[in-house]
Image (cartoon, rainbow, N blue to C red; front, top):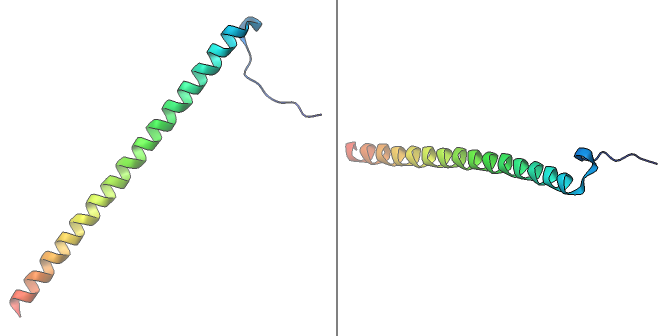
Length: 68
């Protein structure tokens, strides 16, 4: 028989146990939201950098064509 780890309840009171579980879920949700926000910021920064690089390449191409 396997033993399953559980969140322990203070004083064995059911209401306090649900309160602790709710707090744990809120903290976990907050961490996930923060992580997602950081990921979105990184993706946006990479996207902006790619757009700038593309514009720079187009500009260089246009200048080279004018010199021919």
